[in-house]
Image 1 (tube, rainbow, N blue to C red):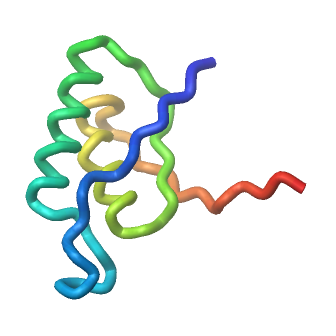
Image 2: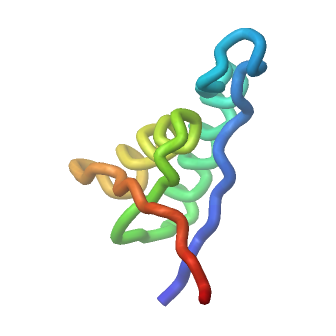
Length: 81
């Protein structure tokens, strides 16, 4: 099993929007990464995100290129105790 970690794209400043959604540049960057992964033949079964707006938007941009027709999965943080 392979696990690929992808950081969300660049968000707008907190002062502009406290929820910090992706900026236009962040959306373009994520689109570029998703296209690269698709062209590289990377196959995934699921895309998980933290639930933060920018993480969810990043997952939603990647899904159509990597696993069309699926929905991203919101996951809670893991605890290692």
